[in-house]
Image (tube, rainbow, N blue to C red; front, top):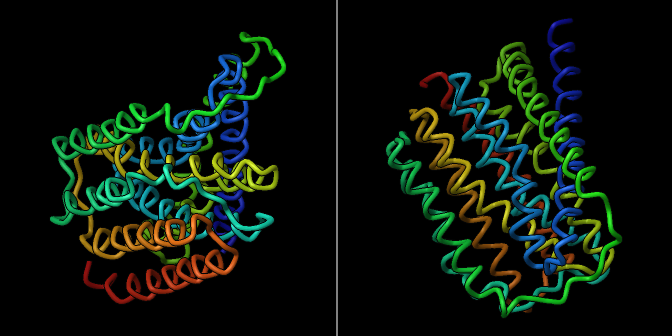
Length: 320
């Protein structure tokens, strides 16, 4: 019993370190980007979103090297469901009048949904090969390339940011990334220990505890964005993070170590990710705003997802 509480306590400390180091990495990467006067959309979708995926990426890469890549996959898919429902829902509740959306930001909603379903289709046989990993990485890069080609339609004049030392910002960014990967290493260690201690499979801890913990950076960044009337920053960060997780990070994990996993992970969690994407985009496209009421619906979706995951895993665990 003492070991269980010790593992839980150390897991919480590791998650705290994961979140804080990701926040610092985001802060200093953003500071570097602003020195070159990037637009808000570029900053959020291409820079902040990339940095926001560092916790999930770190956990997944460490998991792959430690021989448990399925734990990383569960974390990535679970984190995406949390981003599309829990994060969007909470951010909508914190926003003064809901999350306002420019219609052109979701011009490629069909492509976005295809990107979300792509890893589900590749993993329907319960295996991700290196070839699958390459396809996922290429699909993610293609999506970002198409957005880059449309950049003039989204571009806004970036606000000037006070000058900061380039060397200092770069140094703090590197230190933050080192702390991030150390925190990710111990997050995997203590998650597995805690799961074993209470009799839960690692995959459940990855889906719930670690997934929620690793999506906190985009949650905090997005709340701050909508509170300061920069809704497009929040939208770009969350959607960009989901795309990177679903393609590039899963692809890198498969490249490092091809792996087998329970097909139920794709059938349940992967499908939930796709449905969450459909629901969120429908809400945003319907009236060009994600209202507080719709935010509550997304939160309800996430609670149902957690309950369903827990019940199904309990039922199928004796047979896997």
